[in-house]
Length: 221
Length: 234
Image 1 (cartoon, rainbow over the protein chains, first blue to last red):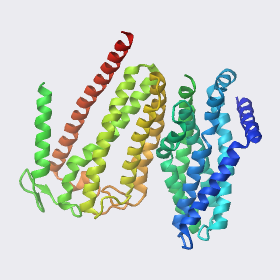
Image 2 (cartoon, rainbow over the protein chains, first blue to last red):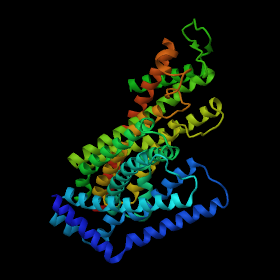
Image 3 (cartoon, one colour):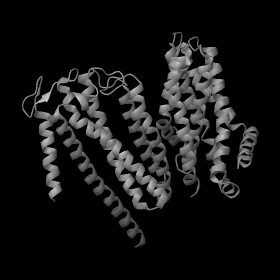
């Protein structure tokens, strides 16, 4: 199963490297979003709590513009029936999830680097805490957006529906991650952030289990 | 018929008692409520606000349970029951938001202040809205039922975070928050016996009302679908 899932991931990666669809649109989206923020700030100083929030705003909307591709592309190209033939639902989900996790990690690392260059207030004082919350947050983001992408790929009005359906599901994750980013910017230690880390960890586990259990019903018509 | 009259009497009594019974510092008579420091006259909202908030969560729970049943048995009646529950849920959710905001205007000074409880009820509203948007975007009945069932279950997985975890670890102004010293836990210690009695009567009355509305709602949805199918055949 894991070999097949890896093969599916390789397939997605190859088609992505050939067209560079997600990479190009995501890169442009990140640049546009951050420049809008820069224009609206002007010469004002922004506070630490605001940069943490803006960081996750950019991440959320970038994810919404890029992550639905995994399943929507299969429906558009009409290749989902082939996937039905060659692999079980959980294998398909693992392959797509792996691709989205890698995509989210690349995207968010770039956003974090750009933020730390551009914004003076965005200084990571406790790097270990930031890294742990970053990894847990990215996994949660990738899992929730992958299962929602699977749902909207079967529905009409795909583009507008995706952020609408994802936002309430991602809200607990984003609120907690904003808090964690603020804490790591302030240089808090792990003991001060254990509640928030526990919430994000629970969210990841619950979403991962739920998605694997429910994906069968979405995938089989 | 008897229980409809009983429900009418019960809800009338609760409404009159909740609005008209006086709040006094030291209650003696059976109709007097105790004074809760920090809440004062505003405390009376508990008879109407808490049942609506409770029902918006109960409706969501029932919607999820019937979604799970639909995925197990593929019976479209279960989808109709889930849909009817969610329709009522969004009504009670809006009522809870509005009554809460009005109460907050007098207790905290502003209609909306992003208290953890307000954030969670706002998220619940968003979930209901997204759920109806998803349903309206799918044509085929079976597909709509299956996808909206999956979304309802996934959305329900986030509810514990909003309702039980976040308001308790984040600091907030709502009675029952983590750092609430003067007015929480309201139900156990600050209310006297007759206030508790009216509160639970109100909760029971509103819950019966909800189940009555729900059974009317899902039966009318099932009948409407049946009539639509018959008219297509003819």
